[in-house]
Length: 335
Image 1 (tube, one colour):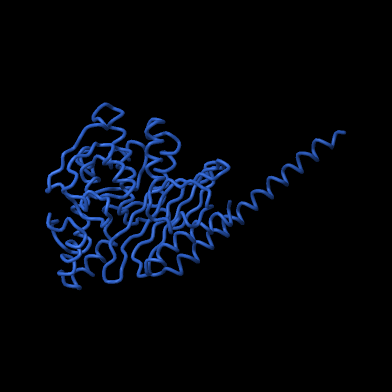
Image 2: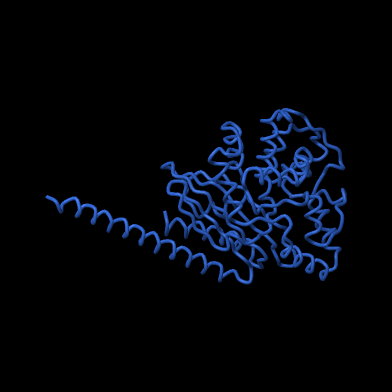
């Protein structure tokens, strides 16, 4: 009778040790798989960070290294704008009347502000947020940036909430031409075909050097870990009110692009609230193709995932498939 509790404790201890050993093997297995994928894409660079909201377990690859953000920044930008609305510093119903000088770098999507210009000149702040998040509209994003005191305003918002390692330095009007050595943005480049013609007029050696410089530039970059921290805090309600959190997540869930990236590697019945980021392909190089988001499975379990790929020469299908394989591998091995 005296030894029975001791046996129970011993058995429980063995189970605990076995569980810890199993988790360690699991972590090693997924890290090995992520390294295999990273080897496949080399010399391009892959960075991944994943968080399990149920257990607090986290895994990653190059999670503390910097990657170009591209349009991933539009999710924290939206959060910063919602935050100002909560403070009474702006109204989401406020209308913004556009002038031609407000047009930014094109995204080539029919429903974008640029492609519809001048058919619609007036949008509410809320409509601009939705366009920036759901279709990655650059003009909408730049208009919102002007409402939050520019890139510095987004950085201050992130730092205030303990999100370190995610930095925004330039507007889309500034960034997109500079990536390719095009100089200062011209309003005449506002449509996709016009921007492409202007790009092709730049000598190849200048464009190639500009892309190389962009890939080593610390500006407008994030670490996968910082992106993951943003997602964790957003989902946990640490950034915004419940209503605005749900509004932003709903917009991210309505993102119709990047469906062959992470989304293609998760269960079909899962809800994926995500934000993509994609650089223009030039000279066979895609400087950045990214995807970050919050996965909600049919059983209610939630995960945050951030996947970044930079400097790749893979084709469109292959680039997207890298992200889907990342998600597929994580779920197959861990969850």
